[in-house]
Length: 247
Ligand code: GEK
Image (cartoon, rainbow, N blue to C red; front, side, top):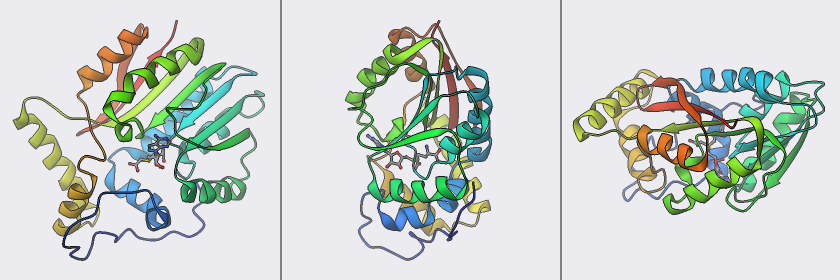
């Protein structure tokens, strides 16, 4: 993805006193590509393979949904891999600042697949005639009680043979394993140049905003919706990407 105005994420570099809850505002948009690539181990791999999975699953004259598209990294990966298939990408986010910059980035990257940007809540939009639905690091921000209905809606909107990709931060049981995997994640962030202060203030900021679940919870919910096959295809520390297929 061509980033027109790359800026380093230093939003949590100075002591903030009471750390405010995390929101996807203009300040986050301005540093987003740097923030996500230095915070999520495997992010680039997951985005690139989202494109590869799109190449395998997207059918002619169907819709692909990128739910929580942010600046369009996954949208672009999909777009570049399905050229000429007469498919439409519907890229949805409820942060207007994200969508404004997303449009600029899509234009700068000359994305050729028809793409509709939708400013809305992914829990409220219709999903129809879908061969691919992608939620890369978005479900974790949806209130827990809304997740089952969202997954059910996605299952119903997918055509037979369609694919859902869900990438998430995970929690683990027992607590000792959770601590180990979060420590490994924090080590990754330190190696990416984040200070201990940045790591701890960011953790306080996303607490109760990003609510991770266990891998078991994800798999069981997918099966309850009707997905007969659902499996992780990538994991690094406490970050994972799952693929689920509707037969
Ligand atoms: C990527 N997928 O680069 N409805 C719509 N959008 C939402 C909602 C909601 N209910 N909740 C959160 N968002 C992207 C990265 S970021 C992940 C996704 C992160 C949006 C939110 O505004 C943000 O843009 C995105 O989901 C999550 O592949 O920041 O860790």
